[in-house]
Length: 82
Image (cartoon, rainbow, N blue to C red; front, side):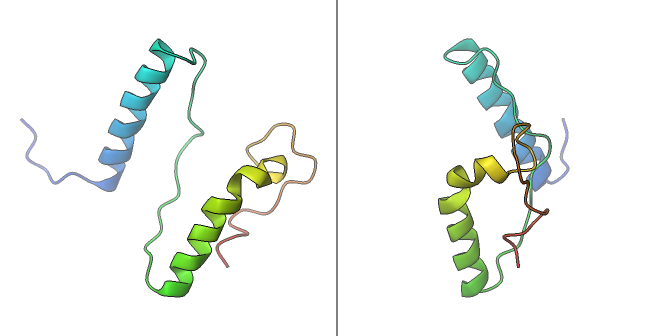
């Protein structure tokens, strides 16, 4: 039995594992996650506002995403974080 504190990485890893298994067994056998994840401490209202805007805009930005193999003009890493 492991009594070490659970880290954010442990939680994300477990979430990805469970989600991947469910997706592959049900509706999307080829499902996979992008490698890694971005972790950021929200320290003020402005930071929260920028993150919310990023989440809202993200689906429309797929054409410019560096992870998209078909992107014609990928944006720089963390361009939204400002």
